[in-house]
Length: 216
Length: 216
DNA sequence: GTCTATAGATTGATAGAC
DNA sequence: GTCTATCAATCTATAGAC
Image (cartoon, rainbow over all chains, first blue to last red):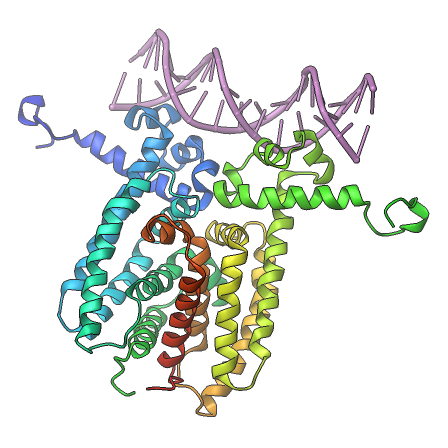
């Protein structure tokens, strides 16, 4: 497929375009995470990507479009983690698999999480529509699931909102505040064992906190 | 004290200076919180403070010094909340008063919390020394207190680090992600009752999660 | 202490040769 | 598709009159 002419590729992108877009997006994600939207420069992104600055504008018309593409990519990943919520009717299994998945995402997509946090902290100037439609719908659906568990007496009665915020906050903290955590860890990244332990502890406290502890 | 000459004020600042510095710091805190360090401009800070741009440089030599002053101010407020930790030997009282205090701070110092989060997310380029010395010392002391509770069988055995991170993450989330929370709240700020309820829920889940629930 | 004017550097974006 | 050269706008910071 790589050497074929336009006729054989009616909609798809060329290999060069696809490859360069990926490199630009990956580098830009890190720069936006480290400097914020205003602090990031097209020059630094270009340098890291090993391309002249003008090429960035060839692939992404503007800095804002490049940024928006990145935020949307991250938001999609967040939402896919939601599927963990549906793995079981049992709240113990559903919640612990959701928390575990969110912790994995914090480890694997640290920069994406930071860009998202930055965007929301600054008042979501670019993706407010996502908050108002997609996130709201997702949240309302999950709230109803949790309310069902409460009504069935499966978990203690807590406002599902505060519970969800606690899960988001705690799991994303390991990405957004990774630098602080690593500093307090003697300057080293968390080991595999530490990630496992942190995940287990987070799961344990939250589940037990809403009345799902095995040993309580 | 206001009209006296230099002789009577060997160390103190003039009223004008003190007043202007306060206005500049308050306005700058909001701008840095909303735009990040790189996105903030001295012009916007000056406009909000109602001063010409050159005056900012008269009071604060550089943009970075102004920013540093703000981050340090916030960090001091954070640390003072630590005193709540010493209100009692009883972990139930100590932890719930610490969490409650942190929730109050998230409500009262939303912008400061955001500036801090921004700084840490970007790798703490300005206040890395605070992380490595002051915060580390504070954390180590609290860890020993928590380990004492565990040794005495007062709470369940959990790594104190993951517990502290959970408290920081959850409480600060209400400041840093206030925009998201308000969007999911129909666009309105949380009411007094909602703040109380959220605080109670956070306290309840965490305390019960480490084996301190009254009803569990 | 205040403020206008401006220097000097950097930015996002584009034109146009290859 | 690539990349050099460059524009127009904007930024931090300062000089100097008041």
